[in-house]
Structures are given as C-alpha cells and as structure tokens.
Length: 320
Image 1 (cartoon, rainbow, N blue to C red):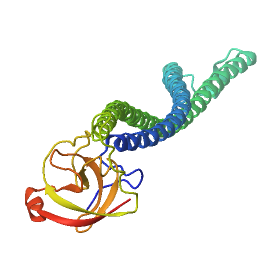
Image 2: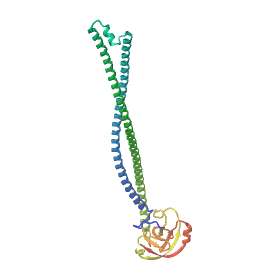
Image 3: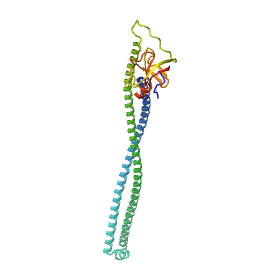
Image 4: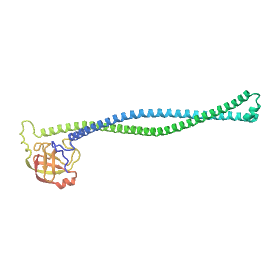
C-alpha cells in the first residue's frame, strides 16, 4: 500500500511532512500540558486546605489529650481524698468504740450537766454530718470525673477516625500531585524532543529542496544549448518505459526510499510530480538515476524479488 500525503505530492516520510506532524503533536502536547497545569493548581489549593484541616484536627486532638490527662489526674486525687476521708471516719469510729462513748444515752448520763451532755451530742452529730458531707462530695466528684473521662475518650476515638481519614485524603492528594508533576515533566521532555527533531528535519528538508533544484537545473544543459521540451501537463497521460529497483537508503533528493518513490528524468517529469502507474499505484517523482533518461521511470520496491518480478515494462502513466 502506498504511503503518500494527499497534499503537495509529498510522501509521508518526507522530512517536511514529518516536521509538520511533529509540530501538530507538539501543539497537542502543549494543550495537554495546559490541562495538567490547571489540575496541578487545583491540587495545590486542595492540599493547602487539607493541610490546614490536618493542623486544626491535630491541635484539637492534643487539647483533648491534655483534658483527658487532667481529668484522670483529678480522678486519682479524688480517690486519694476519698480514701483519706474514709480513713478519718474509721479512726473516729475506732476511737469512740475504744472509749466506749458510742451510746448517746451513755454520753447523756455521764455528763456532769445538761449543757455538757447536749454539747457532747451536738459534737458527735456535727462530726457525723461533716464526714457524710465530705464522702458525698467526693463520691459525686468521682462520678462526674468518670463521666467526663468516658466522654473525652469517646471524643478522642471519633477524632482519631476523622484524623486518619484526613491524613489518608492528604496523602492521596500528595500522590496525585506527584503523578501530575511526573506526567507534565514527560510532556515537556517530549515537546523538547519534538523541537530538536523538527530542527533537524527542517534542515534536512532544506538540503533536499536545494538538491532537487540543482538536479532540475542541471537537466537543461549549458547556457546557449538546446532548449528542453516543456514537461507534460498535469492530468496528461504519458507512455514510458518502467523498471523496478530495490536500493536502500535515501534518494537523490535526500528523502528516504519507500513505496511510491519513483525515479524520473527531471527534464521530462519534474521532481515532486505525482502520478498513477497501472499495476503499481500512486507515486511521486522523488529520485533520479544516471540511466533514467527521457521517457523512463524507475519504481521502488521493498524487495529485490518484487523489483525483478516487475522487470521492465511499458506503461501509460497519468500525471497529477
């Protein structure tokens, strides 16, 4: 199958055509790079917000930890106070038991006066009420601290889950940012490679064009010589002798060989002329040869067997 560009009669492997293809590819890469930059900007904004949220959650977690530690310290103190209060109450009970003044009636009968008896009973009552009040306050304080510690533990557990989710989301954003940066770097490397190849291909195309012009001008002979016959008009049919060839490398114009490359006499069929060859297909005059003179063409084949199979035959070609 012939690989030709539809415009200008240029082959697909022509340096100018390759440079155009690379320029189109670079334009596509530039558009992709722009989209990646937009995604990176969005990721950067999300990362900033995620980082602020992480800092706030970590600060909140630290405060809850301090509150829980403080509540546990207070609970330990309440337990010590409770133990102390129970100890004082036990000491007084033991003292009363040892002294035998545990019966209010005995206190009353043993008093020297009614006022003394009332004072003794009132003292016993105040001590009992005081101990009962202290123990009650300590009991309520201990219960409140236990409730507070349980509530803080639940809040810390919930916060740990939220913090873990936030850290996972932040790490995912960091990975996405790294992937996008790597992708962008790859696009930029490809763009740089395209620029380098375009420069080389442009130079190669310029050399090929200069060679084509030189070959075309050399076909006219020396100044003052016979004027060559005008080339066939586009759309005309020309009967020529055709031969197959299978050489490798580049053509006389610097274009790589390939199916569709046809060698002509530039004075008869100018270089760059497109043509249809029956039995071969579409081709372009892109090569010359010392044996190709006048109404003769050489057709390139990828294998020498195909070239020998074509041999030499007379064909009527149609010029474009």
